[in-house]
Image 1 (cartoon, helix red, strand yellow):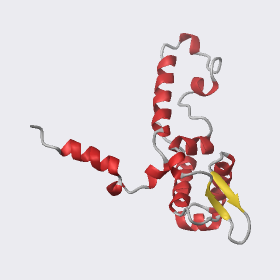
Image 2: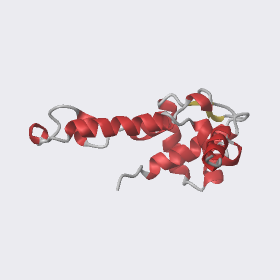
Image 3: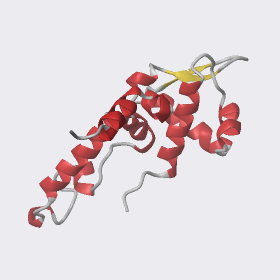
Image 4: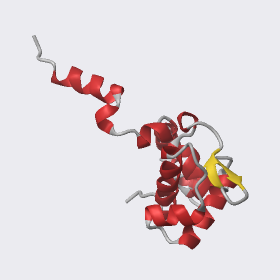
Length: 153
């Protein structure tokens, strides 16, 4: 099974909360309360997301975190990479040539490169704004659904 870690999932959850409240800086404590994610985990993730250039930290009584750029300019891949590091399905993809003792005998190495690129592309192609927009109001989904339901003549 290929699955993102809880940290990547929590990172998306936190980013979604911050994006949904763009008009205010949210503290780690407020985010922990809003999401149910333990405060130490929230603090750790906020640090990673800020170091990844996705969040800006604001000090002071009304301080907290805001998005460093528009939710339309942050992809799911950006969040996953900030939290987890490089997106790589296999060791040879992550570490390159020489990382695996089987690479000289592995006929699927190039195939894994293609699979990794496809997954990376899919994650790059979905923005934080799209992730937090309710599906009932997304025009692209409504248009696609209408085309699928159109009678064939």
